[in-house]
Length: 187
Image 1 (tube, rainbow, N blue to C red):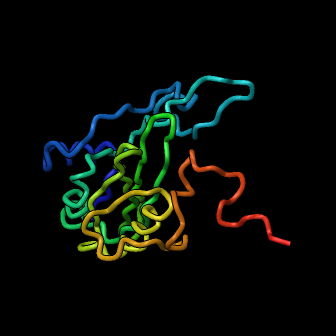
Image 2: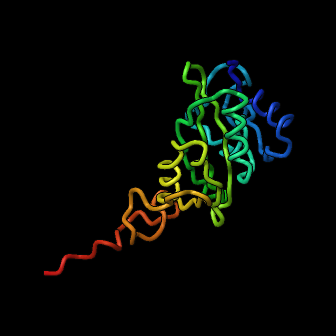
């Protein structure tokens, strides 16, 4: 089975599933500090204070409502058999929650990364659990810690925090000082 890089994936999705790709900003040399294709990783230089566009990416960013269709395509057409993980990222300044999906071939090779971005105040992404059962606990984690809702999920309940817990502790605007659940001990 041929492996697909990010650019090839975007080309194939645009051809085979028109309208799934969301508009996004691509990385520039200013974002990485290096020329494109020079093989070097992004590292800020000492004393350099150039703003970095955190939402710029070379990965395929798709519309949230199309993730089940794209995930089926990745499995059935491209032959990726493993949804390794789903990671949530909170971009507070941009008002975005990003979900990052990592797919792999069991025979090895590079991962395939697909991203979905939703507004923080309307973080809703269809579930993948019907066709990718491994998404179950990972979607529950994104729900529990970031407040992302997954319509169609068979058991979208908290996985780390207790049922009475209020809020999403991994969001960047969650208060990090003090804990309203543990008051001062009465003497």
